[in-house]
Length: 337
Ligand SMILES: Cc1ncc(COP(=O)(O)O)c(C=O)c1O
Image (cartoon, rainbow, N blue to C red; front, side, top):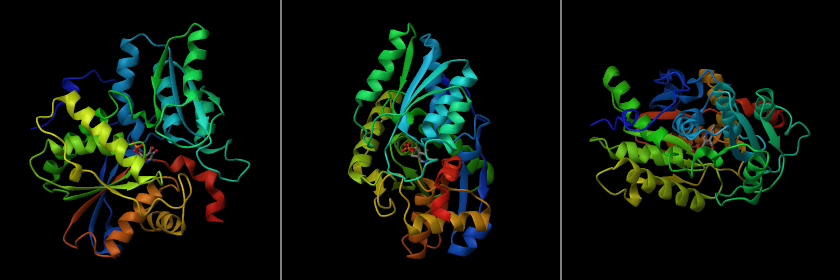
């Protein structure tokens, strides 16, 4: 039974849905597996889109219903998430204040000037370069940014990192499960294995809940990109339980439904290793599918390594969920020198 969340929760559509489902013939041949991609990276006209557009639709409706005038959020200096918050704010006619923390040491003088942060500034967002270190814990920088909006007489809408630890954060990717099931039915196929990047948690958590509501079971593999799989697991678990309760899922989420693979995260958040860079080149050369050194290059590296090692059986039909991130590439030009 579909969850039909769009009939139960207010949603402000910001993307082109369903996002494309695309067969990847050359990557399939290379890996000896049937591989498709769900292209959430090209699912919106809002500043290159990405997975946050899908999540923000539910938060945007809430922000407008509450009469908020400023979206406030937080992320890395090169956050895709904050760029998408800036895009949503621009499209909705709201103001936007972004805390851009240093979650990774990437030694390049253009790191805080090109890529995502350039786009956020272009769209009119105010970018505050302060704070350090990735953590799902609430940050002082973030509280200050909210206070500043109030002090200036505005009404902020608080969107945590990745739009994840928010009561509505899991709805987008729970709804994704319905969207995927409808596409599967239309194509007459079923994906028994789904691969996704995971970090702040609500993408994977939403999918866990959405898939839990479906009759046919699949394996959902979350590739950790935070380089802290314990923190990622805690976030995914917390958000999955909260989302299941919110939507009234009629059963508990089991621990074994949350699979998080720590092996492909590289040396740290935002830092690629050789496998990440090789995977980015593979995706680009075989399919002209652009992935990035922070997230999707890591999940693609995981898919490639698991396929080559036989950890995904050769008869599997695999869905690689592409969550965006390519706008960061110019900030990482040195990784490809
Ligand atoms: C391109 C991309 N892929 C994957 C992720 C991970 O999603 P989540 O933070 O919901 O776990 C993010 C955001 O953090 C992202 O921007």
